[in-house]
Length: 410
Image 1: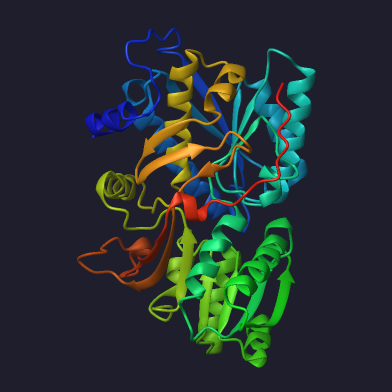
Image 2 (image 1 turned 90 degrees about the vertical axis):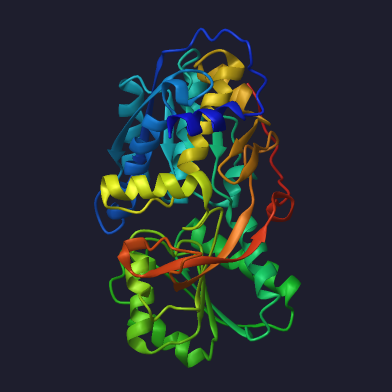
């Protein structure tokens, strides 16, 4: 296993061969600020296990810089205000690398706080590594030099959703149901724009926004969807907001399709069960049957934690940091941020690039659908006997979207 990791790291496109790395052996502290309690806590807890698992895999000889990664977590209770307190606590603990992803409302608050901290504290700069917050504004109108996003943003994913729906003539009436914060609003905005462009015949028959992580009964929303005549629902919901929605759809007898961003995340596989077969889709940068090294990691992770690993951006963060620190010959965030701009690495499913213009990772996307596990696609999340089967792949040049970012560099 360590040999394979080493080979992947060595495949980095960074020209580091023969260099002397003064930072080799240093410990790099990372703090993840995300919910560990509440309705969405199970997602954050599962993701943090992924960081612990891969910090060990990518430390020392597992990265080209030879550094050791030390990861800890602070519960922000999904609150922007709590997140700002957590950021201060992390910095006080000596962390120079902050990770967050669940909730674009939190991400927008952290981007602003990190920018102000770095401006006021030269020599003590921190970098914000975003693994999941997908509001396009973060790499467009509100882009920031110290922020790097490793997930694909809402507009990128919706381009792929619209491209797939273009091939599905049975989709004729769409209903948008989303969480009432920036991410949910963006799903509706970009969904209407992209689908209207690629399938102008489709009718949008309704839309609803509900409070984030507060709704326990989605039955009234399912009743409205059925009354609208929608054959398809598009939702960016995640965590309990998606699992409870799918559960209510199954109980309410709604048999239409769901196009989601996060069907593979904690809780939703069990909610889908066999009732979701063939009609719940997910657009993402990975899925449960990637093959190769990813399969081996996922099996090992499952055996160690009795849990499923699904946040592949965790791996990309360690790959990028190791490569950037080798390129910079330093762990100083100022030098690492500069090294990470435009950096390309060979990852678990091909080359990815941190676009210099806006710090948005360029990567391929997959459309997958919930089906019975098989010999070809065997991984069964939450021991459901089901899995996500890939049905379409969109290369980097297809999934990429333009940016309006006017990056201000220090």
